[in-house]
Length: 411
Image (cartoon, rainbow, N blue to C red; front, side, top):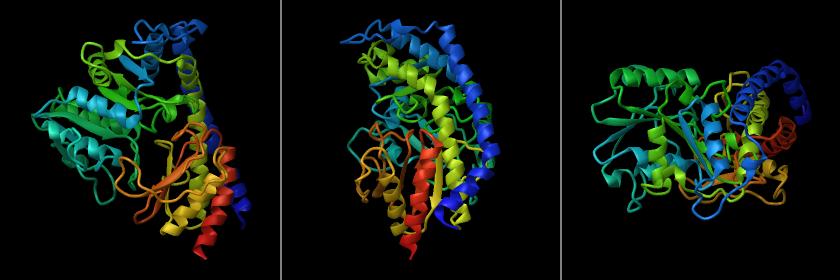
């Protein structure tokens, strides 16, 4: 079969799954609409203030709407967060104190957190340099959470447990809400005071509940991923218990200012609209993930998750097995992106990452992974990670070219 025929077979096979995804989109969109109605969101909330950002009515209502949608006591949605990593770092530095221990329970964290923790780099003010201890529970040989070890892992000074929802650049299953709920239950049974913090990047609106709705004390994510609906230009969020959200925002701004500061620079309309669009955009990305997994498994490549497996985030991994194939795949995606289609992705160093990356990101928002992108570290076994997508039909068009490109790289 040629690439077009592979796609046609996959599209027909996935029709029932696409319908199920649309059903979930409807549930999540209703939550957003209910929150907008509950807080009487109107055009006056699109106005902004300058300077310190005090008394920004739109920002205040957006925080309440976001908290409501996420099932949290409070939230802070801010354009001042540079990235999801920045939002996560603000949470960690806001909550942890010298002598505390942070325990990562899902193996090694995402690459960009290594320097925040202090596993790489020095002299930058990492957690380890501030006297905060770090420990991690490795996954089992099968890439699963070691539930038996976790059930006895919490010590008296384990102040915070880090739960990374998405697989990141590892070949493991991302976490379901049920997994997160089970982790929280085991942790709280050992020490009710240990804070359960979730790195929620790539996971928003995948299921009908969020981590703060099943007991997480605090979570964080990026607005140029799922909750920005592909149109928010920058920023991130934190959500959870009120005092912990305030502690995180005191690291973003300053003690005594916390969540009361931060001008929104006339971005309120985009922030509200992005949240409204988010469930639909996440649904389209999930459809694209299923499609990608289906066709590349048919071509004989290992994929994670499996084609018809329930999605837990908007990331689809394909083990391509060679640097030539990884680069060829990313070039094909770039050539079928709306922006910068004339550019060729080449391996390069990226701030915060250990390995060189090759990245296709022809997106309207620079670095947006809620739009369609593909990247991977240039290290064995040469896995490409596909993320996001505004509509599955765009992903299908790009995949046709990617199939052919990978085939040629193999010859």
